[in-house]
Length: 227
Image 1 (cartoon, helix red, strand yellow):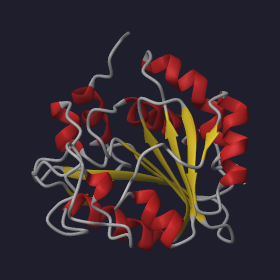
Image 2 (cartoon, rainbow, N blue to C red):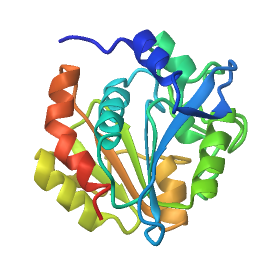
Image 3 (cartoon, rainbow, N blue to C red):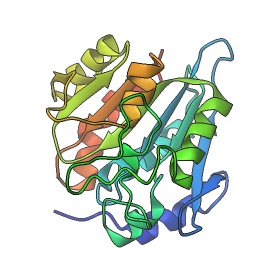
């Protein structure tokens, strides 16, 4: 399996029109790109690599950005391929402060006690990456939120996103799950799907060649910005 070249991918994000929306724990830029759509339809935000050792989502989102640059999406689309650049460059799950960013959100479920390998931070929302992502969502008014993970093979959903999850699963054949199978206190889906009742999709991509992952999920990702 050909791996994702993390250094090359991050270098490509440094080229405009990618824009900075925050800084990581180690001071690296967090980058996003927007694609204007209809003003009367809520925006969609897609992001990847909140876990730095899950690069396939970042790769697929860069390919999606290339495609949207040559088309006109229905919704305004915001794409942030790598929201944990420190972990991404090191090939590790957590950020530079050894925090699992997907347990650091100030959901009602957040708690300081944690299972091994899931340190949620000293307090909810303690990490700059978490706060930057939350600020971005508030700024752009995104009501549909898509996060890409690995290594499972499922379309997990939180909040009122079952219909969208079923549409995605019909295109990539992954199947739909409302429960990922283990507790996720302080997760992104817990905050925005369950607490805020927004459409939240966690697309879990199994380990495979990056181009194969893109081919398998291209239509599934495009449908998230199509209506």
